[in-house]
Length: 109
Length: 116
Image (spheres, rainbow over the protein chains, first blue to last red):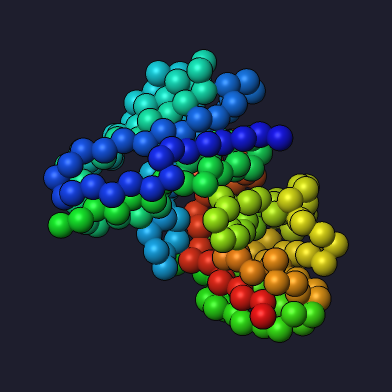
């Protein structure tokens, strides 16, 4: 059974703080790792698809890194804003997505 | 263009009743996926369609669950004789081509099912 773990489970930060979370996944038979943002009452929104060891992707204040040899990815948010409050999901990809349980981020003004 | 839509957005039903959940994928998307998230759990894969066929039904939790897709478009997930443990958010996603590891999946807003 493929296991994808995310930590921490939840995080509360002040506006302006930078933060990061971790996704751990199986390091064998790696194809791709996906990051999604899921705001309450909305659809999960794709952030990044990462495929290469050492990959680094950036979208505005959000960036992600990938280490396929050791099986982890970090998501960073620089200068968190209240609108960043959401659950951040990572998913290990085979022919389907195997999701972690997510990190729930709350940013207080 | 329009995204993935799902209906109903919320459904409350009594234990033992059948329910049907509908998904309209993005027009032209070949692959369609169903997932669910039970309370306190991660998103769990249920079934995947390539066109109208379902090459992977491995995630369906029991034979009370079935799904079909017609015309390469709309999909219906049916749960027969619902149980309280079926209560969850059911999410549908679609992707442009034949699926695959690196293709982004575009999600609908989900159907929140509560079985009393």
